[in-house]
Every structure is written in C-alpha cells, then in structure tokens.
Length: 453
Ligand code: NDP
Image (tube, rainbow, N blue to C red; front, side, top):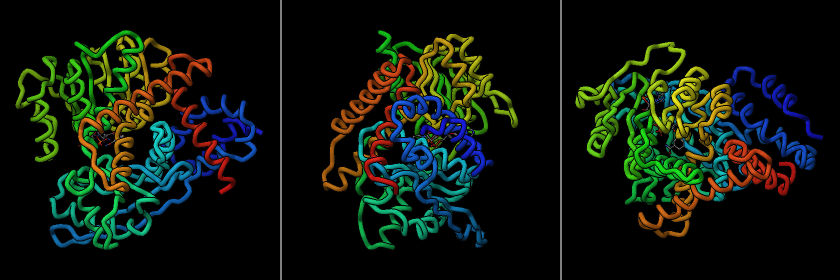
C-alpha cells in the first residue's frame, strides 16, 4: 500500500525533527513521487521510499589537527553514504562552518536523483566538515585535509565511494586529500574526482557544473524558440559554479551582471566581460579576496553589503532576464521570488543545490518564469566526474572536445527526459516534476530488483 506522503513526512519529522533542510528536500520531492506510487504499488509494498530516505550508512568522525600557532583544533567530519542502488556512492565534500547532518543528508538525498538523471552508474553520497577554510593558511588547509583523509580513507574506494569537491573544497583541497589517500593505501587509484589534469583528472571537470547549467538553460530557451543572446543574467556566488556559469554565459552571447559572496553582492550593468571574469578568478582562487574588491577595481559597478538577518536578498530585485543562483541553499525566499515575478524574469535555472525555498518554488512555478531545479541543471559536475571515473578505470584520457561533447549530450538528454516525463505525467513544461519522477523511477526499480537490502 502507498503509505501516502503525509505518513512519510510524519516518519521523517518524528525521526529527525531538527533536520530542517533534509525535511525540506523530501517535502519538495513527495508531491511528484506520490503520483508514481499510485501507479506502482510494488514500490510501496517493498517500502522503497521509506528505505530511500534513510541513508545506507553515516560515518561521523573527529578531525584533530594543529594550526599555525601550534594549537590543536578539533572539527567534526562526516560522510553520508546515501544510496548505492545504481552505482558506488558519489557526491562532493563540503568544508563550511554551517555543515551539519541535516545539510549533508539533504545534499545526499538530492544527489540520488541528480546522479540518476545523468544515466551514468553513480550512487549517491555527500560529506564534509564544519571546518571554515576562510583565513586559514595553505599549510593549515593541508594539515586539515590530511587529518580528514586519515579517517575517510577507510570508507571510500574507486568501486565503493568516490567523493569530489563542493563549497570550500576545490582543486587545492582535492590534491591534498588525494595525496594522503595515496600515502595511506600505497595505491594510485581514482578514489576522488576533480583531480589535476596531470594526475588522473578529467579536462573540463572544474568548468562542468557552470557550463552544464548554462547548456541546460540554453536548451530550456531553445524549447521556446529563444536564446541567451543579449539576455541580462543575474548570477549569485563567486566560486566554482558561478565563475564558469559566467564564462559560458559570455560565450553564448548573454550578459552576466552580478556576483556575490557571503559579505555582499556587486551589480555591473555594463556586463562582466572576459577580462573582468579573469580578475574575479584571480581574486577568488588565488588571493582569497572579497567580492567588494571588484567594485573598487571597476568603479562603474555597485557593491551592496548583505546585512545580517536580512529577510530577503536585494540582489533578486535587480532587473534581469535570466537568474542563476549559484551560491548556497535557500538563497531565494518567497519575497525574493515575488520580486523576480514582478520583474518579469524569463528563466530561473538553479546552479546551487536547493537555492529556492519551497514557497519560492511555488510562486515561481505559478508564474510565467521557466524554472528548472538543481538536480537537473547542476548535474554537469557529477556527470564529468562520472566520465573522470570511466577514464581512470580504463586508463585513457579524452581531450576537451570529447569531454565537452559528452557534457552537452548529457545535459541535452536530461533536459529532454525531464520535459518528456513531465508531459507523460500530465504536467507539461514542469521540469521539477519531470526530474523527480524520471530519477525516482530509475532508482526505485533498481532497489526493487536488488531485494530488501
Ligand atoms: P564555492 O565554495 O566555490 O563557492 C561558493 C560561493 O557561494 C562563494 O562565493 C561563497 O561566498 C558563497 N556562499 C557560500 N555559502 C554562502 C552563504 N551561506 N551565504 C552567502 N554566500 C555563500 O562552491 P561551489 O561554487 O562549488 O558551490 C556552489 C553551490 O553549487 C553549492 O550549493 C554546491 O552544493 C553547488 N554545486 C556545486 C558543484 C560543483 O561541482 N562544485 C556541483 C553541483 C552543485 P564566501 O566565499 O563568502 O563563503
């Protein structure tokens, strides 16, 4: 029997009442999935959904390390091994002071469906630590990564669990994590993705999430006989996803006009061009600078500080055609969504994971804005990670042209499958429903085939 979405929600809330982000992620999936469950009693009979919302394994561990002053610091490390029905656990590591189990479980839950959409054999996981890399020296970052891997190495492997980067974990951290794994295991294998190109990494992995997002958006526009050309684009964040989203927007003739970090945002109405983007890349990737420095360098732009406790984000009041939230979860609330609707925005495609709150999504979906969720639009990163795993296993390396072609094909396929599924289930144009239903069906069938484990 389909236990119904209310019963599932009661179960989650009873078991983990404080895990607000995890509860939010399940709440966002359930309306689409209950339609499927009505037609597939076999899933309910085998309690597929009840099993899907419970991680297969959670590892929490102490990360003790010594800072530059010689003082011992203690952080908490995590790995959530969420679902291995269609492949080894796969998902990034996040180093940020806000990291907790609720956030990692929501990310790991989203990862189940995102990875299934890529059509690659990838299960789902997520991990990280409540470590704040800001203001830490390179040596401190290295010692922290080493200490983190000294526990994590026991639980991962190229056919078991393959982490990658996320907020606070870029190519530098991946290098240190890989270096310690190799030393502990005396083995050079593809246990992490996002590696350097000279030591097992795939070309286009750093670019993949941002590029994939913009490819996806261009397919959404194409389905409406439209293009990105000349469109003003709001982008939030200034990290990996935001930088390469901006690069691809410029490439496709769009005009990116904003960026943000946790201190504030800039608006540059003249447009962020390639030279300005190079400045941002150096500022953020090499100097650990703040986005405020952009406004000092380019006086034609404006800088606004984000005030603590602000109920809405004034960035989303800026007039634009396309909107790409690429910073973090819940950066667009209902008030922000109302502002986007009154500004007649054409498209909102999520670069970050769950950047829109549940009420914001309803407001956006009730409007004329074309909307697609992160699990479909930001899957380019994990897709190229999957390609990196294939290359590592086969000992081959593909060039930029080949990887970019795979990335475009995968994003096109996800786009098309979301539209087709939404149409089949009576909700044409609803990318959220298409993404949820298609990916759920795929994982649910695999779980059913493998029995009760
Ligand atoms: P980065 O660490 O490279 O950049 C994150 C950016 O967002 C920074 O500019 C950061 O500002 C800002 N930010 C982070 N937290 C907050 C916050 N609480 N409030 C305001 N700003 C914040 O991360 P990524 O670009 O890799 O990731 C961005 C998003 O994309 C995340 O949601 C991630 O899960 C998602 N994602 C990333 C993928 C990848 O391949 N990297 C793949 C799929 C999804 P500051 O420096 O001030 O903290």
